[in-house]
Every structure is written in structure tokens, then in C-alpha cells.
Image 1 (cartoon, rainbow, N blue to C red):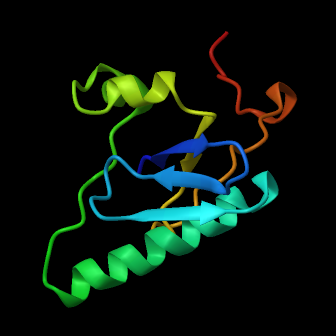
Image 2 (cartoon, rainbow, N blue to C red):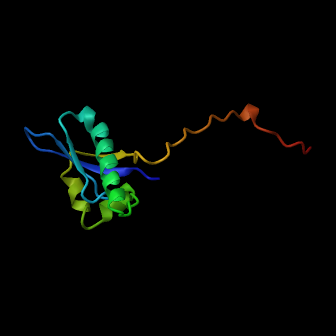
Image 3 (cartoon, helix red, strand yellow):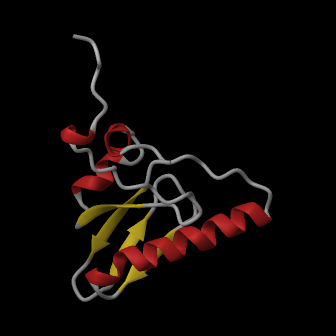
Length: 111
């Protein structure tokens, strides 16, 4: 599953505000930039829980370039402090790539 893109805004003397283009009605805030990912993950989890309780489907996240091209969201990236990508808390964890050693690969016995 693709991660959810989060648009982060920051006004002077305010917390970081987060909007989730592919999670309608989901929003969050964080006082410190270091807390963005934790707060975004928590917001997504609570939003998805509410969607399930209401019997509503959870929309699939779009990639960054698709969102930037979206007429309703594209302009919001220009004013953003940053944009982050957050894995859905309910998604299976991604596996790290396996290490490949050319010397341990099977070789063809053809001569």
C-alpha cells in the first residue's frame, strides 16, 4: 500500500497543521516538527476506525505527483511548510530489501 501524503502548514506562533488529501475529514496538529509522524499516524488510525464503524470504505492513497496534479489539492502544496508520507497504521509493514551477494547466487552449470 502506498503511504498517505500529508500536507503540513505552519503559521507564525501556531502549531503545525496537517491535512490528509486522501483521508477526507482527517486532520491533526503537532507543536514540534519531531512529532509530525507520530501525530499523523495517530490521526490516520482514529480516522480509519471511525470510517470502519460507519461502514464507509477507506480510500486508497494516491502518489505525490498525482496529488500535485489534482485541481483541488495541487495549489495547497505551494503554501505548505513541508509534505510528508505516512504509512497507514493498518497496512502490513513493508519488508526491507534482502541483501544480495553475487558470490552466493546460483550459477548455471552450462559450459
